[in-house]
Length: 393
Image (cartoon, rainbow, N blue to C red; front, side):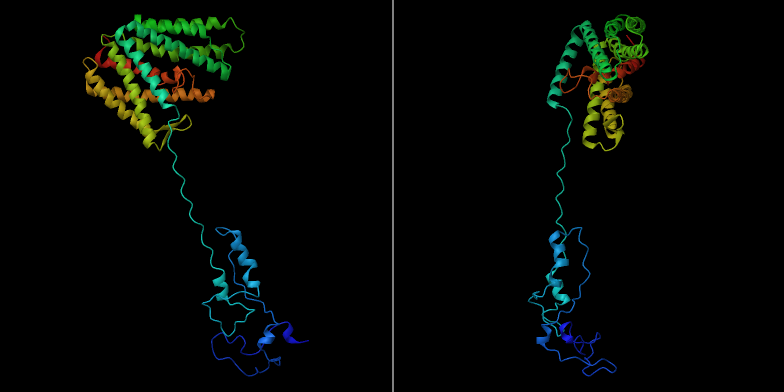
């Protein structure tokens, strides 16, 4: 069988020494006899195995076409073209492409082009700001007119807000938890509590609270005993949370400068909420209580404190008789703290109930209770500090 039909003749000088020295032209001592002379015609009948370089694993930033070129392309084809700039070397044959040629034909894959960064999403207030501002201005007009025209009308506004808030709270308790707090004694007792606080002060408010609690206990006795304890407990909680705390607003009104005290209370609470929202929306990064209210941030709390303290100093200096600016700083700090705690407390209730808002009565705001959450716990604190600073007359 002819040697040359399976491989190139192993003749000295075909590949050449690795160190670049002249090729040995004579027979190598002890070597096997050389085969027939090698020429170009014989080369056409041989298929030496090419040297295949290590190819990078397919993946990462390579696509399928580039992977196919590395593994099933040029190294195993007889008709691999040589690039123009490649000069043939003595050991290159038409059937044996050089490593340089393979490298030129199969360039390194280019990395994927960087993807453009996604456009930053605009922050959203989460509500219809137009409706919220319109409703807020309307409520503010009603409050200011009733507050400075006839005090008794403003007491009626407080009583109506209390009754609607109780209706929202008891309705959500019934829908979400199956708790049936008695609404009738709560509504009647709550309105009476506000009036008693305005007429008889703190003593009248406490008496009305006790009578409302007794009415809740008796009213619930007309129903089956199952769930009695949880129903009356929820009723007493609602009576304290909504009408009793609101009674302190009516008690502020009894002073000679009562309308200005109530206006100070409302302004500081609104300014605190506005400062928390504005600063938190713009600079908020660190969550204040993520499990209760994910939208509140520590930066927002600092904004609430700063805004409320400045507003408190101005209000005490220019609205309250015998008030001092430094008293307003303390008042603003207290309002920011209680307003934030009140908001978190309302959020805790809504999370327990699994709802976003207590109602839908006020477009852009939710329900009445969603507006009273900061005001209710702030009212007794403002009433007490004003009594300590300037007296109750």
